Image (cartoon, rainbow, N blue to C red):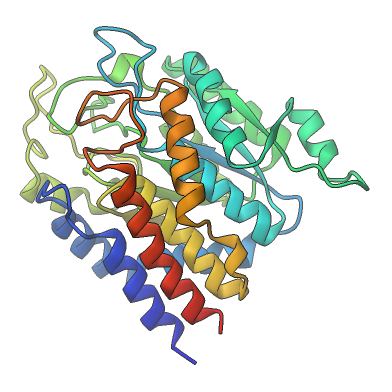
Length: 338
């Protein structure tokens, strides 16, 4: 039997291949790995298996409005597919009920992506009822989350009060710096257009709820865990291109941080680790499902944030490349499930 830690190391290696040559993931991963003390994806999967029980709700927040100066209806393909597939893995493996959170105008496109992962989209109470149905119905819900701070604070409290999530996961979601500003990786202010998930994470941490952040550029929620390293080594980490002048490094920390070349890959790494821990390869998806979901993300209008095209690519890499990453992860899953 191959040691779990060894398998985790290999998963982390695959999701940190710098194929887009952004030249930032090595810095981010090294810093996060040093603080974690073990493979990032396997550590997160262990925590989830220990905490999340059957019918527990897990909040998964995602969505990156891209080119909002042109239209708020433009958002990128990194985040929604990974969120949908991690929700699928948590549901198939642990019996969890995923609730997805995103900007109001992106709810309908996100529903299309989530449905392509096999979920029936229902209202929150219907989704919870479906988990108790004697006949199988695999349901979820997609909720809007405010982009304005005060309503966001209130909604964070009300959502946690009502649904009592076992975990809160943020995937490719911009995080606030010390002045409350959210930046693009190029150092531009995008605060106005981003759902303020920072407040959901903060409220969750106050209540002892497991929080996980997944990101790829150093400007996402959770990167507060390695804020000093980002400020010292990442472009615009200390000095941004907006009047705040405080850099892109977020202050919001999460219990666990996963850094990946593409944020979707970070979610896939956790899903693969879950499959290994549960000895159930069906928890992790395959290249066909990957292609299917990326195509539906494109059909929903999400764009490749690098190319700018509405196509089933992510961060400038084609669907074929993402399928190959999934294939490599499946090799490790199959080895780990023997």
